[in-house]
Image (cartoon, rainbow, N blue to C red; front, top):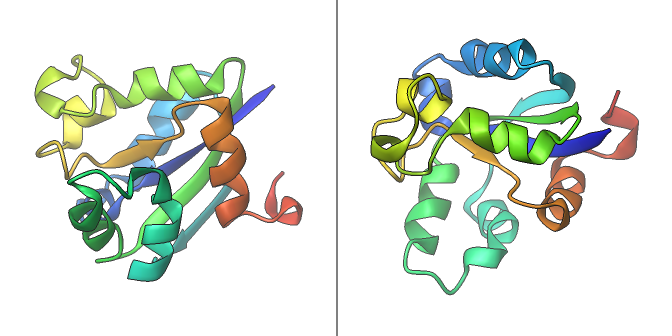
Length: 137
């Protein structure tokens, strides 16, 4: 059973699509193993996205991710990482397949509703960033 981290970003919380994001995961046979809402500080957003520190979008990404509440969740199931990424759709919603989260709800490449771990290595860093082991069902 594989676990991955998914985040409903501030734009998704503002648009009130938290439940719809979770339904898409659950209808695909995935399980929500942990869930909580919080607000990242700019400093914590920088730590979480440290892998992107040298990229031109790092500051705008960390500004965006610290501007409002987010919902973080652990999604679990067979091949959860790749399945969650398929359900989310392409990073740029213009390229996202119909019926994906980003196709349905995202407004642009930076405000794209959700984050999902892109590999097992990323999930291994991202899950404990938000969830101590006692919070995972």
